[in-house]
Image (cartoon, rainbow, N blue to C red; front, side, top):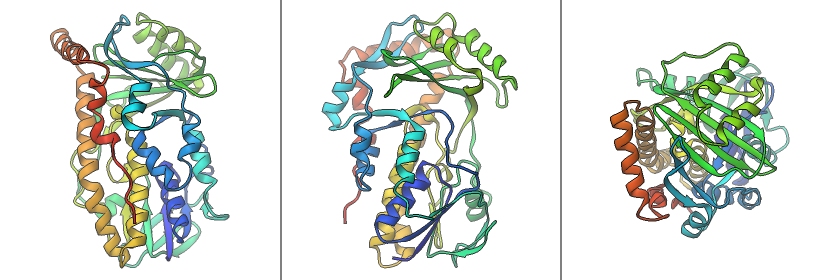
Length: 382
C-alpha cells in the first residue's frame, strides 16, 4: 500500500498502526515518551469499539475480560437509584457487552499487533509537511505516503494544519482516577451537587474509580497525600462503598487532571497527506465513555478508506466525511452531560434528578435507548 507514519502511541495511534499494517502498509510509530506504559487508569470498551477491534482480531480477547454484571446506572449520594439498567440488558440490546478493563491491557494487545521495529520510542516529531508527507523527528527526516497525527489533546499537528482554530477549552470540572483492589462492587455513577463519583468493577478483582468536581481550572494540590485528603473531604459522607474505596487508594497513584473538550469542530480531519485522529481531532469530555472508543473507530475507518480509495487524498476526504459528523455529535452530547454534572444549586440539582428519576421509571431500557446512536455503529466493509 505504501508507507504510513503514526505520531503518538496512545490507544488511537496504536489501533491505526495495527489496522494499517493488517492492510499491507509499512508502518512506523513515533512516540516521544520512553515507553508506552500508560497511566494507571481504567477504560470502557463499548460495543461500537468492540466491533471495530474485531476487524484487527482482538475483539474476542477483550470480550473474555468483561467483568460488568448485574445492575448499573446513576445513583443519589444516599445510594438510591436515579436511573438503572443492567449489563445483561445492554448485551441483549447491542449483542455485545461493555468491557471495563485496565488501559494497559488494551495497549499491550495493540502493541503486540505491530510489526517488529515499527514502534520508535524516545522519538519526538517536530514538523510535518502535509503536502509531501515529510516528517522531521529526533531521529532525522522521514517521509510517508500517509501521516496519522494521534498526538493528543494539545496536538501540535492540529495547530499547524488549522492555525487559528479554537483550542480545547476547560469543561468546568477536574477529574481524579485510581484503581484499588476489591471485588463485588456495583457499577454506578453517583451524582451530587457539582460532584460525580464512578465505581467500575474490572477483571482480576480490581475496581476503577473516578470522580469529578466543578472547580476552577488549575485547582489542585501538589502533594499526593493532600490530593487524597481532598477526595475524602468531598466524598466521605456518600453512600458505601465510596468512602472505603477512597480510603484504599494509594495517594501516589491517584491521577488528577482538568477536563477539556473542543465543541467547535474542525473544518476537516485531514489536510494533504495528514489525518488527525482521536483527541487530536475531537477532544471530548469522558461523560459518555467514548473518548478511546471514538479514537478506535477513527483508526479503523481511516485504514479502510486510505486502503480502498484510489489515492491517499481521496481516502482522507472520505475519512473526514465519515467521521466529522459523528464525532461532532458525540462531543456535544458528552459536553451537555458535563454541564448537568456541574450543577450545584439545590433547585437545579433537584430538577435534574427528578427528570432522571422519571425517565428511569419507564424501565431498564430507558438509559440504553439514549445510547443507541452511539453503540449501534458498525465498521465499514470493503
